[in-house]
Length: 111
Image 1: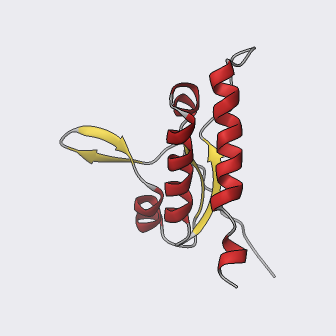
Image 2: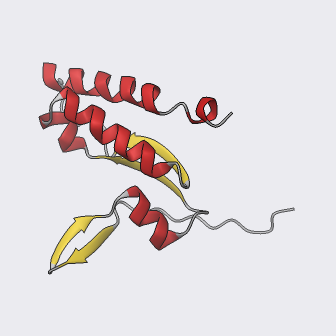
């Protein structure tokens, strides 16, 4: 029987490097917080708006590869806040979903 529940939400973990704050990777966040922490995200909303489809594919692949060492849920850092998405954003969201399916078949690879 569980007697208490602790909940912690963090918007974004950052590391200090030469006085410049940079986002931690999935692996870096797991090393700071421990393997019992479930990480969500790692694909920046701005990247979905400005990068190429190939770059989105590679970001998703890297996030999933790093997330394999712990508990990880692939997700954009935020949802769209514009009323209408550009064609590039739609293409990148679709690329994000396709790459997530392509690289995220963990249970199939581990059997």
